[in-house]
Amino acid sequence: MASFDKDKDMGCVYLVGAGPGDPGLLTIKGRDLLASADVIVYDYLASTSLLDLCRENAELIYVGKQGGDHTMSQDRINELMIDKARQGNQVLRLKGGDPYVFGRGAEEAERLVEAGIEFEIVPGVTSAVAAPAYAGIPLTHRKYASSVCFVTGHEDAGKSESVHNWQALAHSSSTLVFFMGVKNLDWIRNNLIQAGMSKTTPAALVQWGTTCNQKSLAGSLETIADLAQDHSLRPPALLIVGEVIRLKETLNWFEKLPLLGKGIVVTRAREQASSLKALLEEVGGCCYQFPTIEIEPLDDTSPIHNAIKRLQDYDWLVFTSVNGVRYFWKELHLLGLDSRNIGPCWVAAIGPATAEALRNKGIEPDFVPRKYVAEEIVQGIKKIGVEGRSILIPRAEKAREILPQELKKAGALVKVLPVYRTILAGKDSHFLNQALEKKDIHCITFTSSSTVENFFQLIEPEHLRPHTFDQVKLACIGPITARTLEQFGFQADIVPNSYTIPDLVQAIVKEQSNNTKRSDK
Image 1 (cartoon, one colour):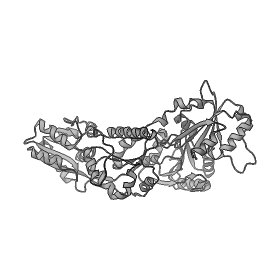
Image 2: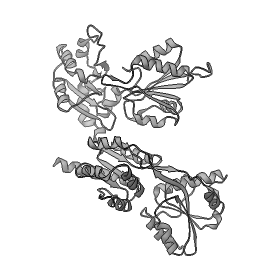
Image 3: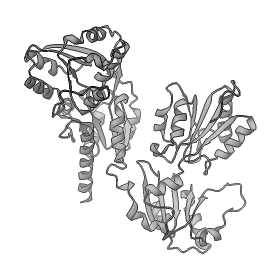
Image 4: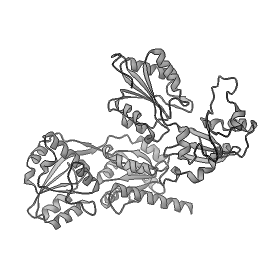
């Protein structure tokens, strides 16, 4: 690790490989540096979800290059890194793939050396290895290939002739992987065939490898260019040539994921979205984060503190959300207390996620309903006996009143304790409207009535309506959320039998699978 003690006024530059597109392929060292860097200079091919790992006050600078369109010249990028480091910043240069594999990382490092700037290289998973693997193509195999060769498919325009030894490439038994070769498919094919490679040699293209938009196709050296044109396969894509491609159909695991390429909108608050987003991405979904809710602490927390100091007066603590647990315990700790101060209170959780949040605090819930709605909690607690019992409900400032109302009817002494508030997220809806028009969205998820109500404050119902006839499915976590959706003139297409995030994801998978089968008929 570079030392920052040598020169207090001089920073350091880290050239970090972001990997091929799947953010899960970032190295642990890369993740840790992202969390501490002052300035992040990032590329077009680096997954933007990695920016969520950055410090909240980090300076983010986009310098991407796409299809010849350069946001910033390479010389300017070099000078930017040098200037930021000389200001004493820890600078992280986030580059797609690996910095030293056709990534101009060595050129950037040379310029840093010339300027006297300390630097480190953090290798990344190169797309040359990852993209074929996600498309079912092993680069080596005892039966087909014992070596692999990485080749640029886009040579320096200033060179008078090709530097490639086409004869050696054509007659080797290596798997050939061409970077940036889609625009020059005819040129690559013709050079290999003229050098003696058989026209029937298997060839494949992998576009947007390891991402939810991955597409691949296989053919022969003779047909691959026509196939690319027929399927509108454009950069970024890799060309692979060799016998290992015969294994593609057998080993192609990633493109079998049920939601691959399906655009799914997540409307949960950003603090809550991670579990739903992660589960959707595990099955291939392309998640569009569109938080409609922001969660805030209350300005006046004295009522919370007063209630906590009198916990001994309550028979039941009833938690209706993970956030209720989170903010209640935050105030508990601010008072110098912990889970032991819950004392003899019985504790109920509205569902498994809330129950797990309690377990993480060292509390095993005494009651979790079979169905995860307030009505079921009421019925369960009534069976145990609530008449004359004191019940404290830490919850959002605004929430459904069914739980306290029904408990009061059953004879309980109920105190509702707001511990946080939800507000309308100030989200720009332009990107989502664009995605709807481009038909990139296939499903919109709603995990509470509030997400529905806030969504339609940000998106006009009449703007969404035309897209729901044959393209966009609406998924609600339960019947109460679905009834709220009906108030805006929409029917839920997907409602799971159990009202949990995993069950919602499974219901979306099932619906999309059935939709695909219907389309195939």
